Image (cartoon, rainbow, N blue to C red):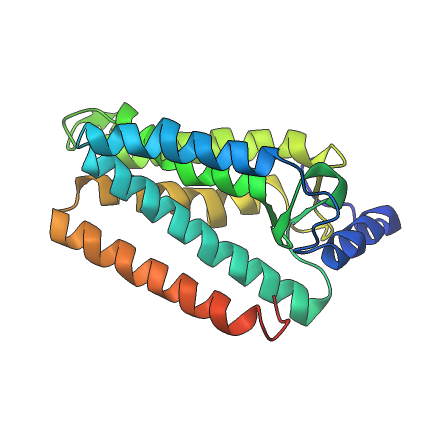
Length: 214
């Protein structure tokens, strides 16, 4: 399933998900367990190792992810359907129409793939700077997996023009470019970039969520 099919079944599933945003009907204790694993099993060990480049890279990707999720929710509000939607039956909690708790926590640690970057930031792979090559490769891997997700009841693409190729180019490449370029940035720039992103995310959520827009 490389693109959305625009079917009535997909639209019905998307409408059901919209109605379930931030509903606690499916809540279970995996919510707490997953949060503890991310914080105690990933972030705290990385901070103890003083692997701050990877931590800031992960926070950069996660922040950009949240900006995209807010934009996706706004598209849903103004057009009727989001570009991507998570089903109500596939999660313990839907945060915004396109992101569940489990999916969000996955993105919170996806940036630690920066630990796989070559030490030489100027090294080329197939004639391409390794940071850009790795960003494209990571984006491709995530996009291919999203094809599988869209073939399951858990993930919904409604629009016929939205699918593997646009998500690869417009979503995942920017995610991983933000991550891997942040990894190499001077510490002051890492802090500034992450602060700007997360202030924007917090301001948008605090404004739009109470109004029922997202």
